[in-house]
Length: 362
Image (cartoon, rainbow, N blue to C red):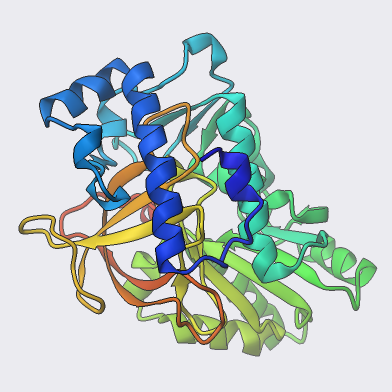
């Protein structure tokens, strides 16, 4: 199935049977494409004896471990068609994943983001507060996951302001002026979880104690990048929400799960606190002992599949995260597809989320 046809389907409209059929068709198409155009991928599939006739579901398509993109340059397009190289987050000394994008894959990532996020925020562009510093996005060719996240979500902003300066200090005057200018309008806020807590929430709290307040009750906050550091500081998901509401009136908050190896196919948190898989992607939870698929509610290693990657073989990946499926097609929010939760990183796995790697450096 061509990707453009998938784009024309509302992102959370397909039931389990219809989505299984769509994903199997598209992911097998991508598997053949990468076998033909990525020599390393072809050798890996030959080594495990993959044959099209033996695959009846996308669940049976072999996965690559995400760590492989740190050790090998995997691409399915000629080097002169690469327009962008994205790198994963990493602490000092860590190797980073390199993801090679051509124009088609890069454009499809953006189109997919628009479809997914618009389902939660509406289709209108809004004044946008980026809770980060402007220097992160300076290198447009070699995108870090953090910079890519900012730029990816920036397409939803009509007018934008960076809430932090390059020293990660809150721009109090600039933020005040921006909020006054767009007073009464719906606002979009975006940032990474630990940075929001450390450099935004804590400063708003300090200022509120001195009588300086900000009204963000019309805001919608989207954040991601990992919870490891905040959980270690005993800041839970619910407390994060409650504290932000108390300090600035912010009520509409959506976490998301995603990774640079499958940019575009993010998993947004709904109003009921569930992460959702759209038509563009899926999660499969596997038992660590034999990689068999778990039952609903059972914890295992998260595998992610994506319909987007054409310039590199990243359509079926095994992550280093643990999670469990909560249900399928029956979330109270009305969105079809799997909804799930993340339990955290596997034991001894490298820290890699934008929020968590920054927190470790911080």
